[in-house]
Length: 102
Image (cartoon, rainbow, N blue to C red; front, side):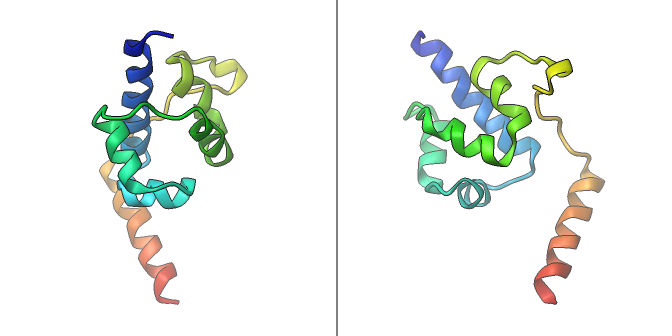
């Protein structure tokens, strides 16, 4: 795999994070990695380690094939993440805040 292709994986990781409306810290917590590493990957100072795919698979198995290859196979359940609407994002945050106060 060429370095250019490896950097595309880094870009897709950022796209996944943004589509899930997560900060780097939130993504790091969900995946069990350091947020500084996510920043280094997104800023193309570091290549994404292969084991991150395993961590992402545990949380979002439907996106791993796309993340690794850039391709989708919807009939197989391999899809690109879609951006949430602003309303969905606000509702998600409100629900998280309610959950945190109980």
